[in-house]
Length: 400
Image 1 (tube, one colour):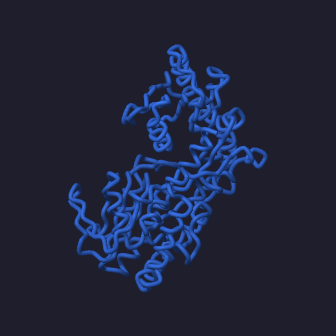
Image 2: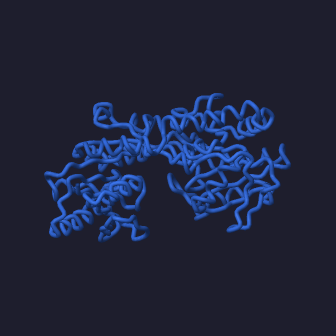
Image 3: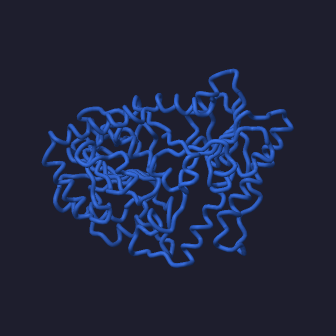
């Protein structure tokens, strides 16, 4: 079996699939990507690079489409080279949105083309109009509508489609949802596992919280409104006032991964630290961590706060659940697909830092009941999102 994966990052969502498939000597696995970093044994990388960025003169509505076309062209050129080397894939599996698979059927017309879909954009009813302080105008509505162009091209041309959660699948046009299978990437529940009474010590960043009993954790790729960072920091201020022995650990980069950046180049972390009188001796920013250190943070967590717009669900929430964390999550659709209030986690109003602080008090005041919720959080992931089980289903979907 010859399989070509396409994703600008490496290995991203395809890490487990590519690793397992490459272990079979009968398979030939090639990964088309823009990333020169990283390798998987048995996987050949085919690096592609767009020949330019979208033009500043391009209409703002179609810059995303132009970017996707440029990336698709770059993949087209690499695919032609692969074809010249007698690599004619049985399957091409691409991540949709960025555009790597746009023209793959033109190079390999007989190849099965499968696509992984994370999101379909809407001006109303999901992420774009969730923030009442940032209302959409007509220009924004039009831009968002056109932003789906490359995604729709992929959805129409692909032979099979997959989305990781029901909520994410529901964003797509109803007449096209039947083409999309829901199947999450899965969580390695053997790696992400609880250790009772774990103490947090990370020598690599000189962090020693071994004497701390109340550790509140927060994990995100970026510190940004989409993941509730401003509301979280406002809650931290109140939590620090109420709980003088608590410490907060924030894992992630000081950047914006989704949504808008602040005018003037200031980051949201800088803004929060400038405007809130926080006790920095009890607030620890770790940056991105190696997986082993990240796991230690989760294992030592007393409360794990996860906030998100109605948008793509973060892997980190599932990983925290698998580790037996007490999840305090936003009452938004991506979270409530997994978290049932009082059963396997607790829910809060995204825009209420005071409610977050109230529920933090509630958690610390009822440790016995919270232990049961922690157990059910892990059980939810083990029973429904265990990597081995979902990887087997993913392979069957891909290869059948």
